[in-house]
Length: 225
Image 1: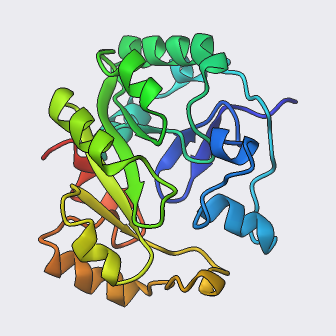
Image 2 (image 1 turned 180 degrees about the horizontal axis):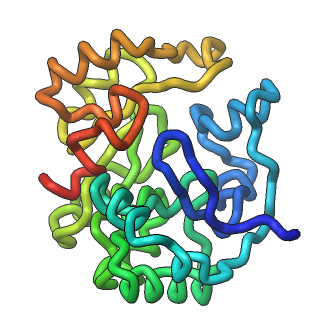
């Protein structure tokens, strides 16, 4: 039985990926702090690499209770172990159309601005998070700000590798704190849950899933900002 593009996820309930080998990784430039790649490197719950995972219209079989639960946290997450690639456009379009049909919202996290240009106005899209950082692996800050200003459903989220990043990235809507292993060689910090909870207070509630689960998160990827 072939793997599905839709997988269960402890944090987000469900996530959708049409590949687990993102564009940056394929180019040999995987983000240094990528939690998927870090897990692979230490063989900890490593996600098997799939070049392509087709969408088999599984969304049409979702129960209303599942749809309601996902909508309560901002929608089903698109791109968790991978990211947007134009070669998956047919699957993406069918997936979004099916989500619209059943009334399921979609929240997107991406570093591929082409996705925003192509799909920002699809009715199923609830919110799109553009990812930035302070180490040069994310979207260019200037471009991220331009896209946020241009598209009403776009928010900027960042990856925090050390405390100094917080002030530098003060312009973002959503903060995420590094939880990947094996990054001390870069001088990055692995934040403990208690620290993240404290930063959540200091940053006026702008920390993503400080509890570790979307069900407890008030931000909902910025969809209610």
